[in-house]
Length: 218
Image (cartoon, rainbow, N blue to C red):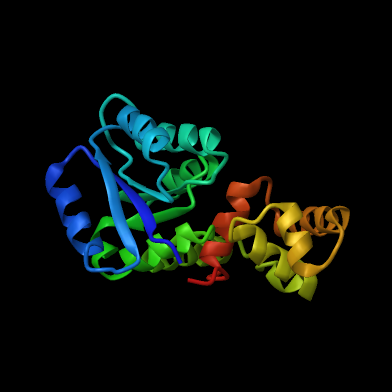
């Protein structure tokens, strides 16, 4: 199996050196380059064709989320973007998912989760820090309690739960159809039904719901 090619993007050299040091200990991961802002990240991604770009949000010239969006479009998501950030609120998470980000890792958990996150994103799956899942779950549970609402997850059929998990992991409708040996139209129907049951409106909300319910396999 070929090495996982990684591009490091952060405007702080100390952070880049620290991440490079952690990854250098792995036999299957190689850092192919670095960039210090979002604009350079887009350029270097085109030049180096990494499997994974590890990138901060707050950077000069072009912020990480806009850079991630450009990378996702230009590579047709062949390159997975893993955000490494100090921001943990839901607004940033929603914006990241909307930008095409496949992973979101908090800097204070990088030492324990970074390698696993890189491998997961390189495999085309979605990764969020366990700490983020815990935070989202607690906020969600508190909101349900305040509004005297019930979680609708158990209203889903077994097939809808399968579809939810695979979509949240980053698969397209076509890929889910192949994985489950079903037609694309059938998957589209399951997707519509499960989103209606859960009160979700787009892919970003679906992914964050799966994270807070700890449905994603990491």
